[in-house]
Length: 264
Length: 280
Image (cartoon, rainbow over all chains, first blue to last red; front, side, top):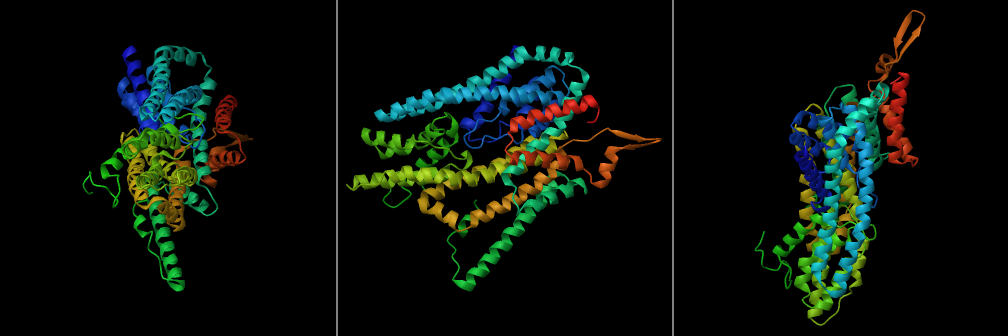
């Protein structure tokens, strides 16, 4: 148990580092940590399913701009671990992910405040023209992130799983069923947050293309992604051709930016 | 790729190898994220090999470190668009100083301040708004059926474009400097690509509503002898009508400025109340 808790804590430390020092490769997301938790605890299948369910609920949570979002690392890892260790059903475990992530968010705020200390050290290095202090400041801050994330998950698994099991057994049935219902509804919020990022009048219609293809014609999301890519490609080509025609009517076309097309 | 020890620009100082170091150092951008100046330490850290090479003198180094420890915040996946332009300007600055001239150092700070907003705008809509949506849509769909491919495809769909943007962003913005980013914005290509990416994102988001939101009612209405399942009526009108309504409900509330966490806990409470009365 201690070994498993240690391993999960280490996983949490490196998952936290994904967004901190690995340039945000999405390794931190529950969809990826879920299967790894499953491997550590010897139940890959539950890990995969839990990862997908927690990802759906937390899909909208993204660290955009200056805000500190609920912590997807501890929320994803701990809820998946509880699902396996305490034998919770998916709905209940997913609902647990949210309070855990909120607690993780508080620690995230703590980390970012403590890091002011390291920013001061970097400033001191700048005064003295000493770049090694900047390096120290960077890895010092990164260490704080790693350690807090490790501790939350390590202690959470060690102390939490028995408590959670008792607590869930004590809860009345309608609340557990309520969690189940809520875990089905919560992806709607995640999707709404995504819509908030990209929805505008010009592309609203395409939402219904995706909706109808799946709801009425039973297509998979992968299929819809391919159809969407085809539509996007056609729009790109038509607009480009249109622009070129316009340009050739008025002035000679300028090709200075064409070499970027394939790369961006 | 040319030799790593030759300067990339005629009469320049920076080599391919130097840029490669900057590339690897662009990853830990948020390592020391703090509330006062956000990613400032990480950004400065990514430039250290360049600054060490350009400014052997302590005073110059101190000034350069101060410049790059100012407030900084942008989308991590596209930060190199700014880093490359900064490398180019620092190089010009160092060359000007060696030739006895002077360079407007404030322009470097101004450049960073002017670029981080627009670059974040492009980065957020591409990587957070589009690639992650598509990756999560495809990945969750597969993982929900118990396939490990879900996680793998999720990582691939997101990271292949992210790494390409990071690598080419650094090269192109170093070569073209500030004018590269200006021309990128003026040409309209980025705007068009963003629009196209959003179209693809919207298709996947629409698909997610029906495939990933589970929201139905077990309610049965009994009138006299006849009993009608409410859900059957909804399904006749339009499959996934309730998930669609719920999503747009959440979207509307978000637009009105209701906080995400508030909505989250509201949905959990709604689920429990609904379960208690047997309507959900």
